[in-house]
Length: 153
Image (tube, rainbow, N blue to C red; front, side, top):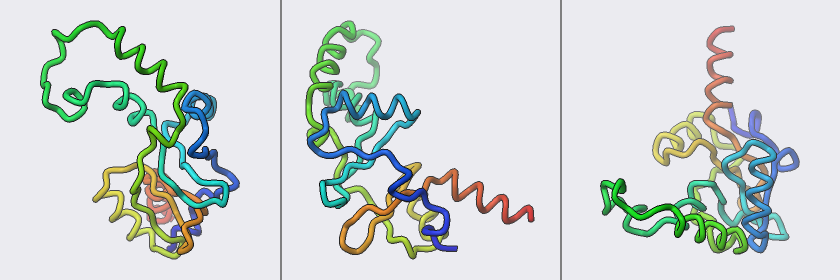
């Protein structure tokens, strides 16, 4: 089975643009119960992904994000973190989004997608045409449900 048969199509997805304010992207994520959003340009070309983890990591000191500081129990209060997070809400998505996201084409098999999930550790993979246009996404849970249903039939 090819992922295009089970993917969520672009017109069913929430997306943001690089110049969208992070605050607006977070509002979209929270209202749709999402933790990530694809980022596309005005022509529909896939640019990357904004996710809540990236926003949080951007607000944290690098020595915490990179794992250099193993025990943060003695660290100062969260007031600086909260201030940084408030500042980030006013920034554009382009400053916080993850780029160089692995993508797949619509004709890849579900096995190929599952292989990518196992390598990347991501829960969602974006489906992009050869010209770079985002056409959809598929999550590991959708593939898993589809495979389990077909095994039980």
